[in-house]
Length: 375
Ligand SMILES: *Cc1c(COP(=O)(O)O)cnc(C)c1O
Image 1 (tube, rainbow, N blue to C red):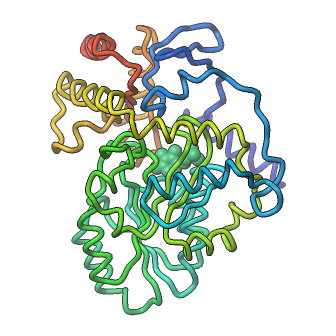
Image 2: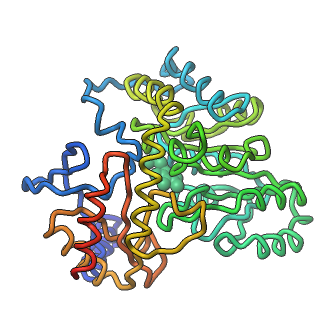
């Protein structure tokens, strides 16, 4: 069988088990999205946590033209990376074509042969791919289970040169927070570096919006912070912030950074503007967090204190079929709440995932909840 036939067969299988996805163009209008067939739906599927991307007017796109090391790096790129280092309180930072490239690139580059990686079982696919691409050995520890991680480290740490612990700070499909302080303790006890992905925390958590590392006061205990410019920052691209040596190592060895076109200057400038605004966006941060707490209250969901303000609210359904049906019923009532199915989440844990942004109102939440209760 040739490659194309092979691909085709696998797609047929996906269709058979109702896991085939297609790209459906949409436009956004504030808190609403407009489908190709002109349906106007209140949008609960966006990561634009502070409403920045929806507020910005569209600009002419203009690519960087080449990779950062060749001729794609501009003053704006440098200024943005310096601003990110200040934001993350690190010596240095570098930019990536996307958050995905940053996560997969940083983990696969920093964890080398003779090293070992310990990765949370619910980490984002981009971190998992970093583990897979790395020449290091990888152990997966049960989700947020610091005791199991300790056991794994005491059993295996001595057999490897360097050890790395890799985790999301906000888990994107569950709204969980990583036990970062404990992970810092374990890392220090076993001389393991800690690599964290703040994709869903940047802009949202912490007084200045600098993530869970800021909220918990552990910025100086983390080896590398990875983030995206595409969620609350409302632009496009990824970044890593760390000490100068680590960043220079990435600039010299990290393949997605070396072999991919640098970010378009328009994305860079948009991100730089957002980064300035984000630190003063106390009102938006407060609003989206209060919405999250309100929604959990309306739904009777009880979670740990800090977690109640995470603007990702999953409603566990179980089967793919039921979650698609629930999503479709909400759609018929004017709400877009995506059904999240395997392989994005573990088997039998398909769910509705409600993402809140500062553009939502309490009234929208009440309407959504009465619609959920009606079913
Ligand atoms: C979205 C996301 C990424 C990837 O970021 P992009 O900029 O969209 O490529 C990485 N990690 C996590 C946890 C994410 O949610």
